[in-house]
Length: 127
Image (tube, rainbow, N blue to C red; front, side, top):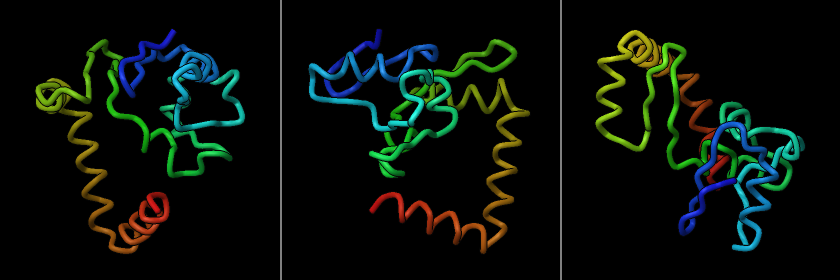
């Protein structure tokens, strides 16, 4: 079951989305994304696919409602995106992945047309 504190909830990757909503219902809340598969989809899949849904559109998709994430790399290394020290540790201990992400970012920034397309989509999502 989700760990609920204040206006946030923490879940494990294998928790089914509708279970999270069921736990949040007494508080008058639900998770942002509402994919059609919410009764079968697990939170790990919902988040990794940036799930959205008919009721939430893109404004409350996973990326817009996720505060932080603890993730495990295939080699077993664990990082928490909420911890600044983990950002630095990721850059040193997982340098190959971190550098590839930076390279992808730079590749995008070097393409003004792509930057414009992405910004247009983000602005549309946050209206």
